[in-house]
Image 1: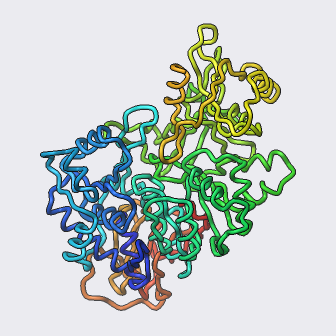
Image 2: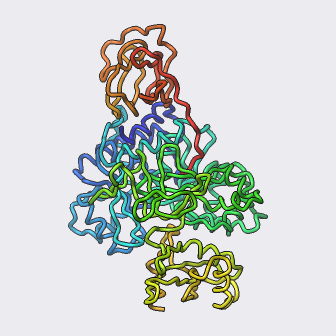
Image 3: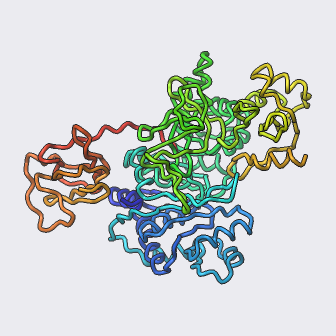
Length: 497
Length: 96
């Protein structure tokens, strides 16, 4: 089984239905399929070992994704926001590649490389010219997608997803043709992110029209959602924050009443922001999706009914679920384990392990899967007694103070509840007494409450071991472009500041 | 049978992808064993003529097999002569 089958089925079922809208042009499923078959011809002819996309989102992304599958070559979208040196190193790792997008940049970063390089327009034009739509979907068992991890802690790893992983994910979570003809999903996540790939495959298989927004801007997002009558959207927390900010008190809000579902994921969602969004979009169902590149996207989700129930609840335990990522998918097994690998009971935090057909856990260099197929995610978290999963950061981010494990998230949550604190990060810093001690970096939105007040707040709400030994104030915390906090940068600030 | 492989009906247009397959057994459509490559089409057994639906998944009572319909046809599916039924799809909210 091969991911090209997902598009082929849509093209066979309703060839003339619109599957994609981008820059004012509509693509039918038959049109996308034809272009993908042509792309496969060009890719095979080039002899490339990888198909890379160095470009913002456009029709070229699904055409290259499916074309690469048909040609039996991994699709490897690249992060065009990377600095030259970092991007150059990644391009060298995929030589010889068939690269679509920024021709000038590739020529500058990889002069003399054995690559085939085309602009987006030339790629699409050639693919349409040599289309062979009569061909069957492939039966490839190999690698469908290779994604370089964002490398917030170390050098980027080349995560690989096999056709079997992605097909299992889609078949397990999406009903074929399940979308009604009026449905349309606004896709604004970049093509090099797992959420960007999952959005294309899920929407194609559900036959939900994709509206591509190539570069996210909150006002353009709002305009496009209104104009195209988007019914679904996926956003990362930073995007939602900017959309909510742009809508203000909602008095000048355009008609977004057809927006029936907003899914979010890819980072920590502040509860305060979520509550504002629930108030601004009272008739929209919110879904929190938790997943990793290595798990083919979503492995746990908190659905719309659970959001509304928590939002309206007086029970602190139910209300707390707004901060949960929900329950594991029925097709995924999930366990919390301690450092010795023992399974932990509800309420106890440890590392999240998952298993399932959609879980790859593989990198180019090695597989991280353990015997029995379990993947240690390196994410820390716990389950409540009804099976709701709560994240408490990366396992590597846990602060170990005198043998006690402290999750940065619990400290950050308390700090963020203070009216004068806009943003907060807690990290471990070397301590001769404790091995590691807690240090926090905060950004303010009011007058500095003073170190004594901050320390007292943490002591009262948590306990004395959580009280920071060092408090630093900055203008803004360091994030990458997907809204992921760069903790190594926070540690560097503390070491130098 | 092997999971991941495609099979065609010998008597109608049905094609399926085996998402899950038992090691032993015969999958039939319209009363005739399914094949990798279709020759001259035979006739459909009226006992297996309810048809297959595009994109639907079919399974048996024990869940030993799961066949995804990738082309619909007039015949219906059976494993070792026992009719398969539609797999209950538990709809999940869209998360991408």
